[in-house]
Amino acid sequence: MNKATGISASYLYLVVLVAAVGGFLFGYDLSLISGAIIFLKTQFALTPGMEGVVMGSAILGCPVGPLMGVWIADAIGRKRTLLFAGVLFMASSIGCALANHILVFAAWRFIGGMGVGLASTVSPMFIAEIAPAHLRGRLVMVFQLAVGIGLSMSVFVDWVLSRNGDPECWRWMFATMGVPVLFFMLGLIFVPESPRWLAAVGRVKEALGVLTRINGQVQADKELHEIEDELKEESGGFSELWLPGVRLALFVGIGLMVYSQIDGCNMIILYSPTLLQAAGVKSASSAIFNSVLLCGWILICTAIAFWLIRAFSRRSILIGGGFGMVIGHILMFLNFTHHLPLAITLAAMCVPVASYVLTLGPLSWIVISEIYPNRVRGKAMCIATCSMFAASYITTNLFPVVRDWFNDHFGEPGGIFLIFALICAGGTVFVWKMLPETKDKTLEEMGRFWLKLDDDRAAK
Image (cartoon, rainbow, N blue to C red):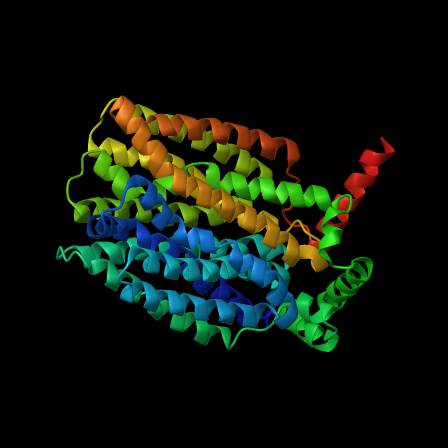
């Protein structure tokens, strides 16, 4: 216990553990396919359309996770819901490794996507509900850092396993998923339950105990009273999401999460090996290796993002990142249309990816964990996250088709990045016009903000 602040470091370390391992599995599971797809395309003779289906199979399962999680997390708690996500991850790992038909493989990827959906919704929500307001952004940011580490580690594993040229090395790629899943499930045993969930189900003494160990007695009493007051004002049903104020918050959250998936930067990361092959890299192993370099850049940017989130407001970071992504996509377009060398291609890929990882990537998760009232947070985050995964699935499926269309008609795929540049420009305007500042606000303050905003608009 820190006597100056009243904060128990051990509890906060447990929050970081959930963020780290849950986020790691998110990035690791979704990114394994980026290297494996090269071998899957050859073994199963995939068309561009089928390539999109296989790449998007896990993402298709992701919305199912939040839809289940909205009930499960409220019924049995955040902690046990994350344990269930671990079970889904493990089943997917084993099933994908043993699959002998591409549709069977896609089905197991779908189940893994359900685990991703659960973890991606419940983990940042849990962190936001347990963390002190002044540390919440940085702790939720740990989730995004872990996603980047998981992404990088999966691509590194893909490269190591691809070096011997075994056409079925993709099986071992997915089998490795079981190791971090075991650590995830074991770590959850030692994690406390969310105090806000405990208060919502009437376990007030337990909620106060967790809050006291995190914030000290005085701050814990204050937060518990705020939580109880807000819970009395809310029914917590889906119908409450359409109430004035809350409805606007839901719309902003959905818009931000959809923007985070259709901006094109995730497609650069996910399809980096095949984009590098389109840029002239011949061997699968070399394309994956250069993707590892890109992932190293992602980790560096994620670490810098911790400082950005601490130093600047949420809105200013997101607006600056939007401009960076627009410039980055224009550079990608110029790179492919002028057939520049590999080193320039990698540099061009780094610009939009850095802009995304420094800004929209982590902050989209932080903001949606902050803007909703307590009793509807799980349901609101479920809808926002489902919207995100729906947008991600559509983008992932369309990307190889549109990429190949530009390639067939113009001899290179650069045109798709002009489309992404326009999308990022529109997303930047959306953030500027619609998103409120959430930095250093308590969750209860943000819940009241939307109601006050709606009252002010009604008065005008």
